[in-house]
Image (cartoon, rainbow, N blue to C red; front, side, top):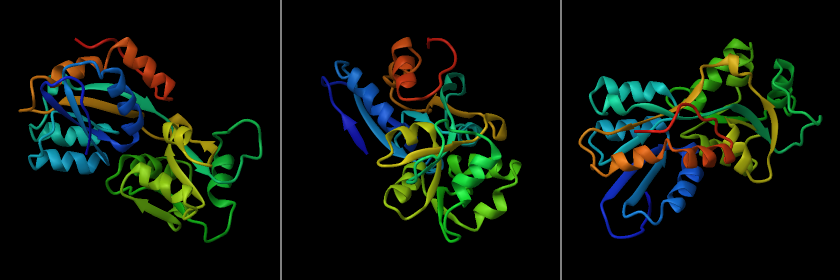
Length: 246
């Protein structure tokens, strides 16, 4: 768990999907003059949701899909009235091999080439589809595009999207299915192809206050939906929706 201290004041613990690590730290730096002490825990949305369900001391939860927020809502663990979509993302393929063309395609042929044109034993990393949102999105998209059976045999199931990215960065996988924002921060990797947005549910990041959390968490929640925050999200490659918080 990481933290950023400004002036002495109340602490707010934010549990956020691993793909938000960089942008949340950027936002924390902008908020550093606040009197709120921010603590972060970044992991797979599923891991964080289960920790909250078991009583982990979180004040604010940001998931990489609606399903894990639904999971906590059904158990009375979040303030349902505070649930809002914080950001959106895109699903892409990254690899160490540069793209052959100038433009990055989202055709099925381009995706097949990016994922399967290498060595027959070449591994493909993404989150575990059983519980990690990026893996769930990937499985849905690959099934709709008729590529699941071929990819499944090569799949490296990581415990979160940043772990999947690391497999490719270290050369332990030939390609990775990650978010567009992860591709932007990847080391020595190239954007090989994009999945059509129609191939999977919208990649949305809902945020909500955790029941029983610090009263100071609402101030942080409000900041998530300001125009300044939306500008930071856009700069990092995320999509944004809605108006300012209240």
